[in-house]
Structures are given as C-alpha cells and as structure tokens.
Amino acid sequence: MKASLQSHLFFVLHRHGWPALLGLLLMALTWPLAHFGADGARAQARALQQAQTEQRERQARQPDPAADQATRLAEFEAHLPQAPAALQAVRHMHRSAAEHGVVLASGEYRLVPEPGGRLQRYLITLPAEGSYPDLRAWMADVLNELPSMALDDISLKRNAVGETQVQARVRWSFYLRVP
Image (cartoon, rainbow, N blue to C red; front, side):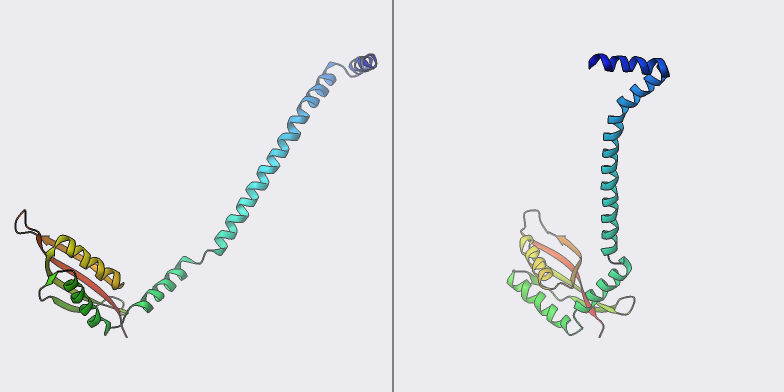
C-alpha cells in the first residue's frame, strides 16, 4: 500500500509539476489551522454579538435621566413637611439638647423662600454650649430624627486649652414644602 501511494505521488508530480504538489501540500497543512481558527472566530463573534444585545437591553431598561430626575424631585418635595412642622422641629431640637446636656441660648429664626417658589427654608441659628461629645450627639440626634434638616455651619470655640466646655454657633436649615 505504501508503494502505491508513493507511485501515485510521483505520477501527480510528473503530470502537474512541483508547484502543484507544493500547493497541495500547503493547502493540506493550512486546512486544520483555518478550520479551527474559524471556529474560534465564530465563537468570539457570537460572544460579542450576545454582549452587544445584552447592553442594548440594559440601555432599554434604564429610565430616561431627565424624567427620572423630575420624578425624584417630585417625590422629594412630596415628603417634605409643611410650615406647621417647623414648630415641632424647634421643640425637638430643644428637647434633644436638654437630653444631651447642651445648653441653648436664644437663637435666630427666619423663614426664607427658596428660588422656584416650591420650597421654603427655615434658617435656625443657635448658640450652644456643652462638651464636644455632647454637642456631636445632639447634632446627630437632630439630623437623624429630622430628615429635612440640614446642618449648614458650625463654629466652635474653647476659652482655655484644658477646658471641657465648648461654645458653638450652629446654623441649621429646615426645608419645608409650600402649601
């Protein structure tokens, strides 16, 4: 059998010449590379196409940012308290200060309309005195209990280096919905 294959190759060689035999040999060597390489390329193309499809689906599921922002703003404004809640907020601040050992002096209270006309801001400026941990606990309690309250500014002063009492000036903003 080996002799017949050898004689057939010699026949093809003499009939078509060395270039044809070399071409057949190169084609025989490159066929497995092309075949298996094409499978890998097809698999990569399928994976890329699937990833693009998933990305388009994710983008289609995402809401419009402008509409989402307007919806979130409307929900935020709906959860804000109205003007009568400001008195309850001030009462809570004073009660919490007493519970934490913070002494409050008379403060400044102003109702300021916000631009746009849908919100009001109740500005509260309070001088306070107490130890630093007590002041922090009081401010944390107020911020946790009143979600529409914001701490705008705080300034601390201590008369002497070793003194435990701190004098503070705390400025709050309590946001309200216009009725």
